[in-house]
Image (cartoon, rainbow, N blue to C red; front, side, top):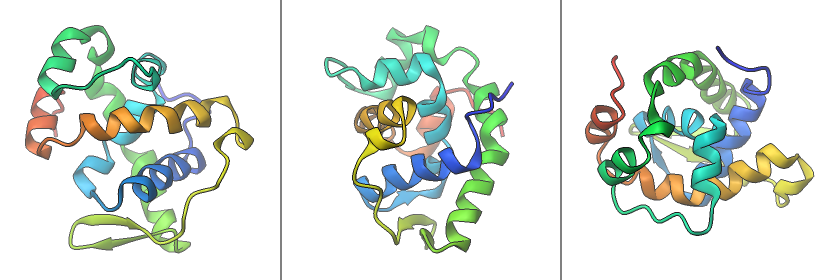
Length: 147
């Protein structure tokens, strides 16, 4: 079940931070960002400085406890993520360009001013970016997402 803090506003900030830091992001991958960053176990793993992402398959295999039930987390956040993307486009934060989400407005300078959860999300984004470098089909398959 979706927690209260996992709302569209935080989702917009999460996506905006990610997209502004890493340039344009494939829309299929944008929908993986909130489930990876909002889950406390995953966020704690990805934010650690000693976390090394070699491949998705290696990470999913070695840290399977983090990815158990990922399909449910993905589904729980599907509407929230969709609303966040649409709201971001509507207010001019994002634009869609040939299947990629592009940030039109840079992210806030200080993640710490928003709170600990957002600061952790900003730290975890670095490793999540490495994690989602593989093709979308591979990611969805290894994470066992059923569409």
